[in-house]
Length: 204
Image (tube, rainbow, N blue to C red; front, side, top):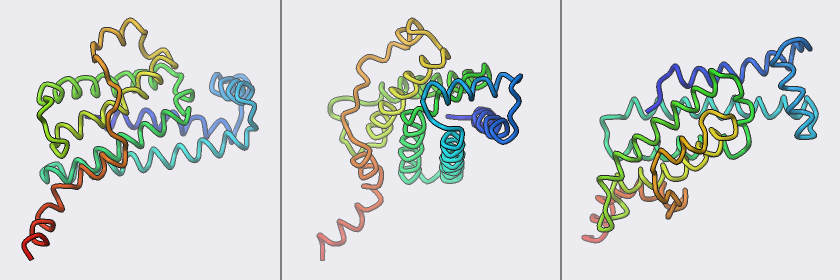
């Protein structure tokens, strides 16, 4: 769903902030933005430096999960677990307010691309799910997971002006209120893996 170029853009934005925290230049737009964030949020530069370091760690974990998805793409249900985990990590990054760091046009474009890809996948999967679809079905798990990350992506995208409210309305997603929690979705994504074990236990 995401290209390496898109992820690299977000990583580069974080590294740019780290660079200007370590070597400030009052005349540079990045330093001006950092000063604005520090002032608006009422935190010190050291606290912001710690937050950026945490963001770097989370992005690193996010990339590792994406790599696992690519490596295990042929495994079927096992890949869904990594999909669920990567989407909730993305949601965590966005909900923690880190999206305020993505103010440059290239970073906005990356958020726009991630959102567009998520919207397209959501619509594709939605057509494969009906009220009769069992909760352990892969399509159900993916759809419910996307509801969580899409809500966060849309809020972040609006926050950095990656797209407008009119464009969000044009997504025509309908109700994307999640019906399942992260814990439940992680359990459902691993259920088929354990079904043979359950069957053996029941037969013994």
